[in-house]
Image (cartoon, rainbow, N blue to C red; front, side, top):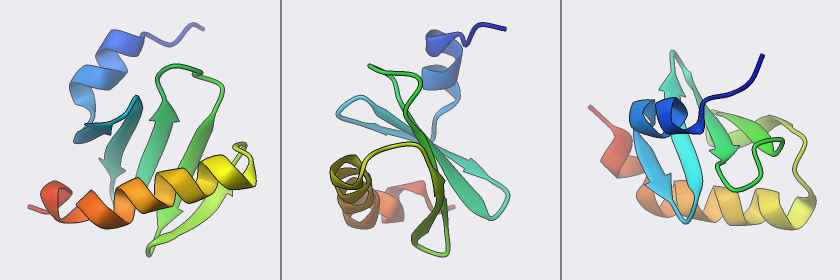
Length: 73
């Protein structure tokens, strides 16, 4: 099964520097649209699942922390 990057980007609640942030119930799914095998799940403002390296995790969390208010309903 191949991911459709355009569909993911269209459904994302926020995109920052190529990272798509999508709300999913209580968590936020993050996908690097430039390297789709890099993903993370944020729950309660912490990364709980990831296959990104530590540096990329820090970048994602900084983007999320600075901009999460734009995802709130």
